[in-house]
Image 1 (cartoon, rainbow, N blue to C red):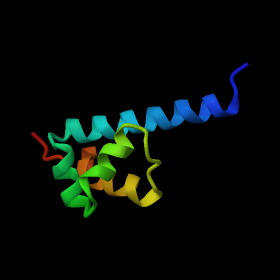
Image 2: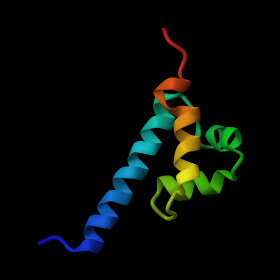
Image 3: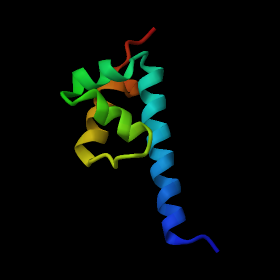
Amino acid sequence: MTSPLSSAQAARSALATRLRHLRLDAGLAGHQLSLTCGRHPAKTSRIENTRALPSDADIRACARRAGPAARPST
C-alpha cells in the first residue's frame, strides 16, 4: 500500500517535471521564465527541483508564458 506522503511526493514531482517540460518546450531558460513571471530565478529552480511547492498563481503564470497557447504557431 502506498502511503499518502509517498503519493503527495509523487504528485509534487510529476507537477515539477511537467512545469519544467512546459518551459523547455517553449524554448525558455529558467531565468527567462522567471523574468516574464516577475519572480526570482531561484523560485523557478526551487519549484522545478521540488524544493518548493508552487502556488496556484505560479502554475497559472507558467502556463500562460510557457504553455502551448503561448507558443507561436508554425
